[in-house]
Length: 224
Image (cartoon, rainbow, N blue to C red):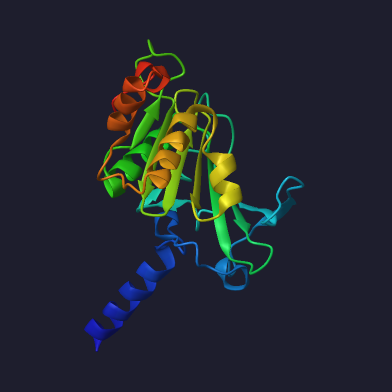
């Protein structure tokens, strides 16, 4: 009887201590009505959004987890820029999750996120430096089938990870820009030529562009 009570208490304790959400397990099929449960959040309207609602933001410890890494435990780090948080957008039509953005405001949590992404997906598909003479990249892309992960600002102690399903055209066209613009062109090239990333890597694409007279991709290429 004592053993049964002990096992029951352990299960309850583990359940209480485990995160309610792990951001790495989001599939973008989740519906707003059931997504948050009791997790606190606040809504901010986005006037620029056409197909999605705006953002529901949360700083809750229950939701700031990625692939088992806790991203909410470095809030008072010296030199940090504030509290880590995550924002969620849902489609206007069906109220289905279409994007989330993790704001990371300390160097330790940024490095935790990079480690968690590398652990789950392997090395990044694409990296970009603010200057080619810099020691480390400032922006990274990971991709898992239709879901893309854009991490920016990693050398500046204030970074953000934008995650979405590329089947949402508004997000696909608008998010893969700035330091990621060459990767957007790469994806467009694959689509146009009915190729996959296994058939043509980003580096191979950069060499193809060089052979066709465009040196921008290969001149700015950084090995992940």
